[in-house]
Each structure stands twice: as C-alpha cells, then as structure tokens.
Length: 124
Image (cartoon, rainbow, N blue to C red):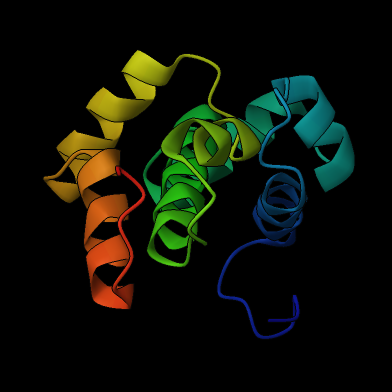
C-alpha cells in the first residue's frame, strides 16, 4: 500500500514500514522518529491516536503476526525456536506466553497442526 492509499499519517506509515522490514531489530523511539521525520513524542502520540498502541506494542504485534504466518507455512525442518528468533523474539518463554495469549494455542501446537496437515511428523 502506498502512503497515498493509507489512512494513517505519513509518519506512522513510515515507521510501520520500517519496523516490518526489520522485525528482528530492537528499535529505539528516536530511531523510528528519525525515519518517520517527526519528533519522538509526535510519533508516539500519533501511534496512540491512530493505532491505539505505542510503537513498542505495535512492534510486538507485528512480530507475533509474522511468527504466526511463519509457523503456518513452516517446512518440515524448521522449529519454533528458529522462527521465534527470526521474528525478533529473544526470550522464548515470553514469546510462548504472548503467542498463547493472542492465538489461544502454543506455538508448538500451531506447528504441529501444520505438520499434520501436510502429513509429516517432525517429532519422530
């Protein structure tokens, strides 16, 4: 989606796209604000106003969504740890808790369902 089609302010749109491009990176608010071309407080205010959450919370949600997509599309030789780390999660326990809270199943359950749907068993 181009910035012209987005209902979001340009600064929020730029920061979101930057985060999506580097999910594994630990961003600081001032870095995102520089990319967005606004002051850090302005970016934070616009995130809260237009998305209802802070940039940090939004990054966490983007990471969870990416992990979910990766688990649902995983190849037989890819595990939860590898996917979590690729999506920017450094603490696997917190990742599992947040994932379960959001999707009502453990990441391993998502991966197991994927395996069963494809007819392979990675737990042999």
